[in-house]
Length: 413
Image (cartoon, rainbow, N blue to C red; front, side):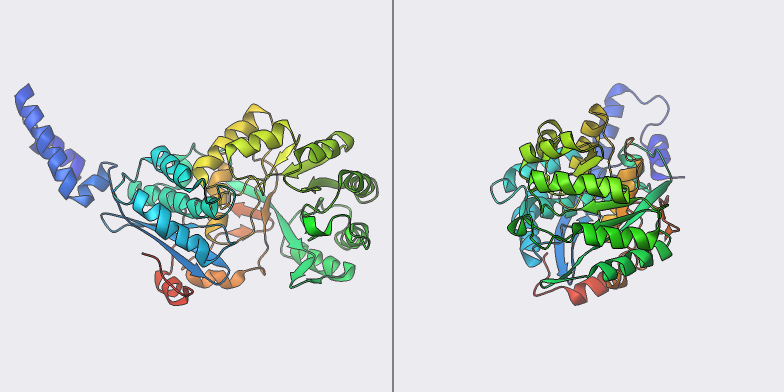
């Protein structure tokens, strides 16, 4: 007999009157306040602790319920211990003691506290990890996968595209031949579509030695004509250069998606590009709220949305963007630069979004593979497909000891 059945039989015997029922309800409520396990079974639990860990190449957030159950999420990866400090200094005091299942009130309380320190930066990246950790925790407490809590699933298999950058970091860049070799490697891993990220940023707008056409040509020749090819300019062009390159890529190399061709904050410039080119113009990696996505759609005229729940303040806000996408009949293809907890959160998010039917981004098996030491199991990615599973929460089993050992400079909590 479970506790819910037991309560029904033991606290409300036959013939029990209204006054007796009220007394029983009071006793039950009092027991819920002092028995975390009972609160868990009834869908009631309190947030006992909020922590964050900055490890090489990742920042992980942990939320612990009063029965000891932990939920885990991944924060945006830029900022390291600064993001973790936001979790500790701002979010922890706001959330501890709240009901685990108050999803919207918790998210709103946090957003409006951090709005002046960067809702498009440290603040939203910190909130993202905590929000995803809370969804993981809710799923674990109720014994269901996160997708069941955020709308159910439209699909069980997720088509993926392999994504890589021309940039090696530190001002070093791959040659066209090296880009072609990397693309071939991703095709060899089973990905059925490829994205080349050019690694051009605002400070290097319209480079004289433009890598776009040489690298795109080399990649197309390497992967053949049957693999869809996307190109991300990483905000690198003026509208005129973006339109010229976009036309050439579409006509000569059958590129079907052109991502962030201009600086993310120049919506008028993006609209010029979108109006001029007959291809998907993608954006959303640098949009951090539903209001920014509203402007991206209405002013920037993006026709393929790239939300990232580690930047977009978590799954809670991501679902609002999914509603916008459905309202304006736009497809979703998430920006996903990490293979572990963020990827798991994206898989649950994607299967719950009706318009997320296109291939979704994946960094491939090589990039950041060292992060898997922090987990006891792995996400299934095979033959260019990702698979959702029915375990509780986000589905990954965290190696908490390994995270704590590698946490940089400090452990929050």
